[in-house]
Image (cartoon, rainbow, N blue to C red; front, top):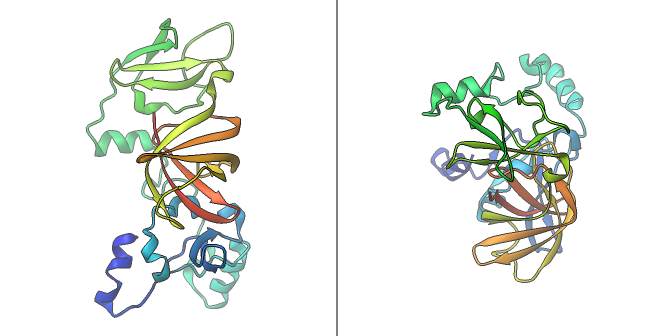
Length: 250
């Protein structure tokens, strides 16, 4: 989308409009346009837009931001006889229509289904996995191992090709680091800041403090949170306003 925004002048356009569920509005506190959550909370996409360059916020329009549900938008489409009025919602990754992301990765990358050990944090071998990319943090089913208590995927050791498992309490973290940060209301975090943090698209926001650590940001939750996954985005909010975000470190 950033490339489209930058190329808008090639088409004689001052702005670009997209169908994302989000809002850009002027905010008195920050004295600038800010990225905000959509009114349709169940459809809000502000989480995936945190990496927009701050200087381009004035050039984007989100016409769907003030609608509270997709039903309202479908009604408008139907009124204008648009064929998308009855188009089913996209529930999965849009460019993987069958939802089989494992098959997509195998076909479009150099990933190979290389077997390795399933281990506990203390190195106990419990079984064999069929390829690290097939598993996600927090996964319980489909591990093919037996143990006295339920076990979950809690991490990966790519160097040893090991899938690390543990009990549910081992899934919780109170602190983690975020890299490749992009901020939309400032250049950096000058002092520790109380915010709400979202670590997955479908997750809730939880209260936390963020602290700038050179080129990274440290997140400290008020209460430990479950299934913090390296590689996922952590997005920082001030209420409905996106402060910024980055990639969760391993």
